[in-house]
Image 1: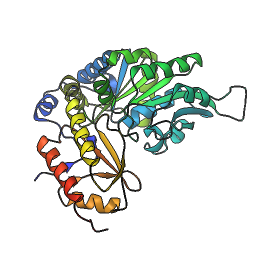
Image 2: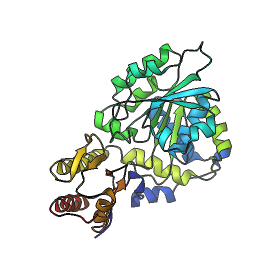
Image 3: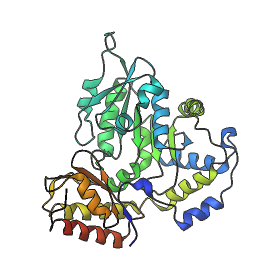
Length: 347
């Protein structure tokens, strides 16, 4: 049986149709702005989100870090949730790249409220504090189990930012999962965000790539930062072609990933080794094991059945569904999870 890899939606491989687009791509030197496929991707993505311009980068971490550096600087601060990817999983890049500090907000499953954001803004006349320079949201929220901000919630936080003259950035690692789940139009995001990082190598299935979106002036500044970060690529249109294919063909099918994640969540709720499970809203399932066995034993038991999963903290497990998880793999996973409820796994 094939391996069912539920560790992340980053493990997806290009479909045959995507590979054909990649091999047929017209390319040039992107640092000279001469790669037509990259130019087309940047134009397409920015138009989709109602933004003026875009910048293709190798990863979502790079697009996030470029945006933060463009918005902030030494002696300044970024407001984000305490579980935000930009804080936990980007190698301390905010400090190293921008010299900025972080104001951590105890949101609910990764989501901050407008009141929490406003309460975190530092008074400008007190020299003991760093200067608040940026508010950053994450959609969907990885540590929140795929929870997401709706457009109304985004608008309310945007209003706070505008009153305080603060830019608002979106880490859109799985933004299309949020848009599909909420049945919302990405073009509306341009009204509320000053910069958006859109990752194309997760649920959309491209092998590499994220696009940073913003105003023409912002992207001009971001392009210079990308160069300093070593992110200027040459004939990368082969990668951009995969991203264009993903945007054209793999957005609506995210509903299938959500369906499969919900099926896993519903099964887990019935099993005797589950202490708790976060609500399943998109394609991420996060749950806590009770003391029947350890997280290591559980992951090893899954591996014995050709299922891969991620430990996400003490006794915490994460599953992520994606386009390479078939219905056959889903059914196999559900049967294995049920079988583990019938026996004691060796610790």
